[in-house]
Image (cartoon, rainbow, N blue to C red; front, side, top):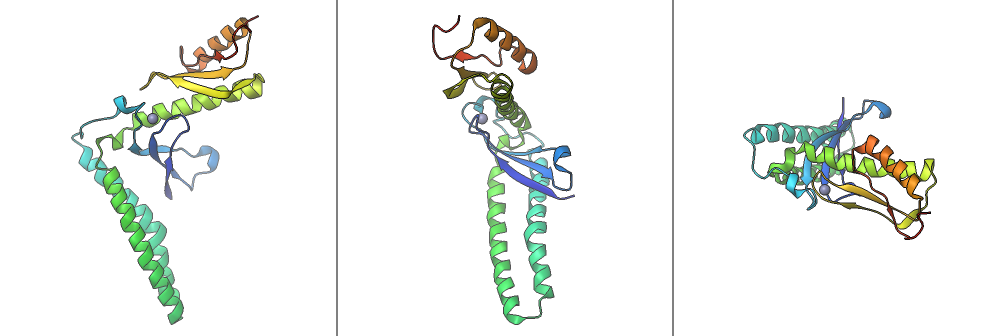
Length: 208
Ligand SMILES: [Zn+2]
């Protein structure tokens, strides 16, 4: 099992979240899990934990150890292995220099994660769930509108209204008859929750 950490930022808000995944699991079955909430954007700020929980330290220590294990495994062990194997002095010197660079990089990573894990919101996996849902909602609605219905999207795209966990997605569509619009809204209410998607037709007077 090889755990990887990827820094993710959606195109639907400014939050930054580290997620972990296991690269020994095949792509389709792979599950991405929340690892650390790095930054919370102003839209989701009200949902963030403001004070350290009682178990903050133990959870932080566990996760930090995890990060260090990952970089250790990834960088240091491999270089040490190479240094031990090589028979050429010049090559060994080069590898040793590389090893110093890796150690310095690892120190930077460690410092960065120390800062990330000092924040009370670092364990806020609910923020990841909400941000991910919004991002997927936008992508799914767009796939539906463009690929299944061939609806004309206005060049301004979409916007979200509201904040926290109460954001409504407003796709901008050039025109759509009211009956079609009502039908779509009913479908979206069923798939994404009531009132979570409301289409805006940007050219007035087209509701024939
Ligand atoms: Zn956000």
